[in-house]
Figure 1 (cartoon, rainbow, N blue to C red):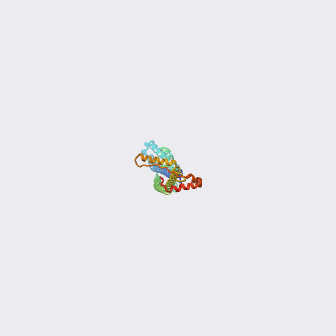
Figure 2 (figure 1 turned 120 degrees about the horizontal axis):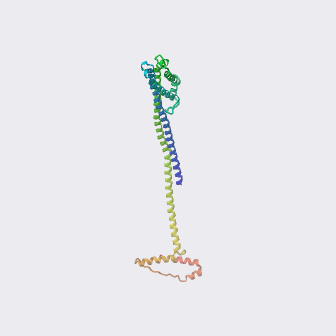
Figure 3 (figure 1 turned 90 degrees about the vertical axis):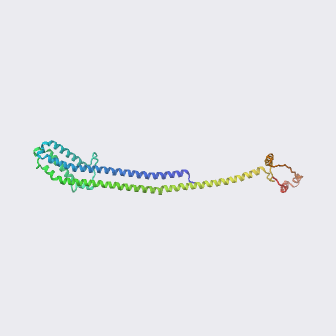
Length: 319
């Protein structure tokens, strides 16, 4: 018979196994989405910074133009201050996009496509640095050199439009990568939803169904064992009852003649006397003596005397 301890152990092990699968799946899902969401957050920072670079390049070009325009040079210090703040912010953003920045939440690694844009075909790293250096040189030039034919200003003017176009291309690439990560998150949501349903289905099939069958089998076995015990108890009760009847007969009757002995006779007389007192029936006591019975025992032996006693009893109705 399966013990309660064995059933409890099996249920506990299977339950722990099921819980372990769920915990593993939940943890994997959580960690996966943490990573994906972090990447998505960095993508937003990258797109924001790269878009800002595009705007800063436009502002830098505008302030550079004001710096070399004669009728605006009365505010030269203000223009320089605005241009300096713009170029410094542009430097910070470009450095973050190239090498990464904890402050701006931008990672140091690049996708293959953006790496090609910065260091391959477009040479954006080199071109942005040259653009920034031209602005720095323009800022440090003496006032008499701040003219429309200044080489640094000419470089800024000449390279502004193509640089702006390619900066816009990089922004679009970052946005494309961000959308791709967003799509990945959606696919991962669907994937983990399907995996969760599949895991629950497998647990039902291979853990909870077998566990249910084992419990049912244990209950059926226990019920069968219970019925078997009840049957044995009934049989033993019958045997005990018969044994008690035999014992009672032996204790109240004479083994030779089958007549009631003194104990049995006293019980019977008490019963008859009780009924008589209640007015239910009457009774009488008679004493029978066999003449010359001692002579039979002495002459023919006690065995013969026993036969005579039994034969006499056949002709009497004994209660």
